[in-house]
Amino acid sequence: TDFLTLAEQTVFQNMSATLPPVKFVLSGGFPMSERKVLCFLASYEEELYAPPFVCLKIVPANRRFAEKLTHRDYLGAIMNLGIERAMIGDIVLQDGNAWAFVMEKMSRYLAENLTMIRHTSVVTEITADFSELPEPEMEEISALCGGLSRTRAASYIEDEKVSVNGAVCTNVSLNLRGGEILSIRGIGKFRFGEPGNLTKKGRTSVMVYRYK
Image (cartoon, rainbow, N blue to C red; front, side):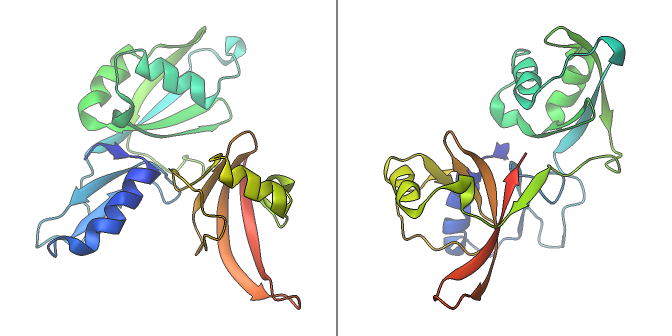
């Protein structure tokens, strides 16, 4: 497939038990990736050897004159070249550089034509070296996501302002198992950690990670 959103991956995972016993892999290029490509393997394959996507490394042509660019800036510049969103996976930023996963069939075109992000000239190259690829920055928090009270959190859920793995959640009693991505409109994005031990009041302790 092309790159799937978290919601689309959830749909597939829910229906995968009804499919014939065919091996498949969801891959996005690195362990923490959100957007992933669904690849069906041949019967003799145990793992995905050649994913249908590559990584572009995008660096300023001259750091002295480079703007402070955001994820939205990079995504917008790529899509302005006529690339559909499903052709683009995760984009990771660090220290003025960017790594963007894109479908291989679009990579050469992007490497040749992605030369400007906003007003900053950039150099784009296809890279197979992921050693410099940073993981998304997160901070560990032990309080409720966004500091919301239970009442306010329930209100956000009922108003359809909360999504879990890309799908809108309206169930205030939904049990999370660990690893889910939570987005709260106007508050931020979080990764739900593994549930911990029960407290003396019968509540389950959990660690939550906020995306910076």
